[in-house]
Each structure stands twice: as C-alpha cells, then as structure tokens.
Image (tube, rainbow, N blue to C red; front, side, top):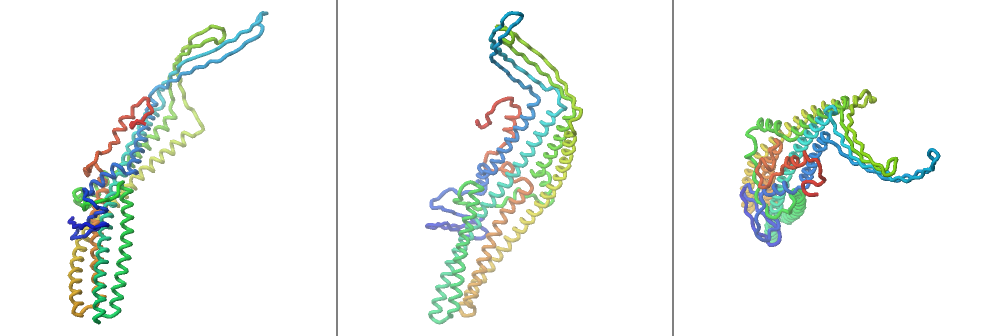
Length: 465
C-alpha cells in the first residue's frame, strides 16, 4: 500500500492516495511504526483470552497425573496416644493401674487390578488434553483474526476521519466562494443555503467519524493490549491463501482445530465407556502394614504387629446404577460422533463464506478505484461547467459528495481486502503464530504436559507458585 502522510500540529491526520490506508495516531514525535505482524505478535503474547486458554490447558494437563495416580501405591501413617485408668478387684487382689497406651504404624496399599479403569482413565485424560490443545489453537485463530481486524479498523476509521475533515475544508471554501458569488448577484440565496447545509452535514460526519475511531481504538487496546500510535499499512495474507476454493475446503476439513478437537472428544467419550465398564470387573489390591504398640494392656509392655493382606472384590449387583451409566456413556459417544459431522459442515460453510468475501473484496477494490477516478474527472468537469453557468451549486456539491462516498468505499474495500484474506486463512485453521511465522516465541502446550504428567509429588506449579 502507498501512503502519504502530513504532520499535524495537534491531531492525527492521514491522506489516502491510490489504494493506500495508513494511520498516524498521536505521533507528535517520530517513532517506529507498528506493523500488522508486530501487532499480531503483541496479541499472541499478551491477549488475556488467549492466556486464559493456555492456563486452562495447563490445568487439564493435571488430569493425566490424576489418572496415573491409580497405578501408584497409597501410603499412610497412623499414630495414637492416650491414657487409661483401671481400678478394681482381680482374684481377691485390689487392682489399680494407669496406662498410657500408644501406637504408631504405617500402611501401604497397592492396587493390582481394577478392571482396567486406571488405563482407560489415563487414555480419557490424554484425549481430553489433546482436545483442549485444539480448542486453544482455535482461540489462537480467533485472537489473531480479531487483532488483524482491529488493526485494519483503526486504519480505515483514521482514513475516513481524514477524508471527512478534508471534505469540511473543501466545503468551507465552497461556501466562501458561493457567498462571494451571491454578493455579486451570480447565484441566489438558495445556493448559499445549500452550501451551508452541506457543510453542516459534513461537520456532523466528522463527529461521527471521530466517535467511530475512538471505538475502534478501544477494541484495538482490548485485543492487542496497547494503544495504537503509528500504524504501518496492512497487507493481505495472500501467500497463505490456497490456490482454489476446493483446496481451501480440503485443508480446512483436515486441519481445522474445531474438527480435531471434536474427534479427540470422541476418543475421550469412548474411553469413558471403558472406565465405567471396569466397575463391573473384579478388583484386586494388596495391603501391608506395620505398627508399634506401647502399654496396650500391661504397663511397660510393647510389641510390633505386621500384616500383608490381599483383597479380592467381585461386584454382583449394586442396584443397576453402573449399567445405566454405561448406557448413558455410549449414547454420549454417539452424540460426539454426530457433532464431528456437524462441525465439519460448519467449517466447510465458513471456508466457502470466507472465500466468497475475499473474492468480492478483490473485485470491490478494482471497482472502487475506477469509481474514484471517474468521480474525480466528473467533479472537475462540473466545477468548470459551473464557472460558465452550465451547472448549479447543487450539482457541484453533489459531485463532491459522490467523490467522497467513492473514496470512503475504496477505503472500506481496501480494509476488507486485507481482513478477508486473514479470514480465509483463519477458516482453514492456519492463522497461527507458528504457521504464519510471526516474530514471537511460540507457546508450546506440550512443554508443561511433559513436566507434570509423571510427577509423583509436589504442590508447586511450573511457574513457581
């Protein structure tokens, strides 16, 4: 995009040339311009919604460690101490004694077989982790697209504001000339009123444009995390757009995180069925304990007791709850499989829609450029004809308004051209920091997973809390 920019004294200004759209916001001193890629990198690193999603995935990682705890023994230490007083007659002899009984011991219990519930719980937890990772990738897609849209909205609204301010200046000059001609009797009071009315409307449009720009700046701050200062022109992401609609649909159906997330959800639902079926199997566990006792029945006595016990439990009937839960889980598997097809249809429709928007935006840019050029020629002609009395003031004002509208349409088309290219890449599931090579360190969900999946103990998180 080609941009020409003039330095204002107190407020930002932008002059659009050709198909350029750029913004200079609060640029009192020269600073390095923010590019669309650097803005996306900021959003990737600091967007609260995306960071919350990452924290959610880290929390889900712990479900694997929770499930794997079923493979490990449980160890408990028990201790007790008290006092007993005995007074009475035993075989004709008076008995009076005070004991301080105490006991300390350790018990270790190891599960040997529980109907494969631990195996299947681990598989369910792993599938849930994979599903959440894909959901996080979808959040990344949405965040980066929203950031690109916010960036281009600020550019668009800044350019529109400058066009409307320039229009006010033109109409002020037009009104001055009309009043001069009225004073010498060349035009009527009606011409002056028309110029005044058009100027008032233009000033109102400036206020509306300022409000729209403030709104876009607020969204930019929300998504990207900083106030926009100097924004460089945005460029379409054409190098990542597939060559054809069919290719885009194929990529989307294979790679979109929503589809992959739902497929992992099917795996988790199937594992849940196996977990519940495990409740119908026998379970076997082994328990060993050692205890040291003091003063239990006789003063100054002590002893050690040790035991190893094997336990077999065979469920026969528990009221039918397990059977109902298994049937319920099987229905949920069927529901999850249907939802995979539903999501596929949604992604296919989204890709087709995004592709159509991009193609329309390309055509609109070309048409808007031709419209601007034609309106510029028409305005010059109307002005010349008005000078010799062949056109009225209203004709000149209408030609100016048509040119303004054409320039605004061109700005909107340019903005859509960039945003919809990002929309296609998002729709196929490739608008990620890693795939588009954003200048930012990529977040790896696997790193935290590997750190916690096999932990036996510890309450600190990986960030030290």
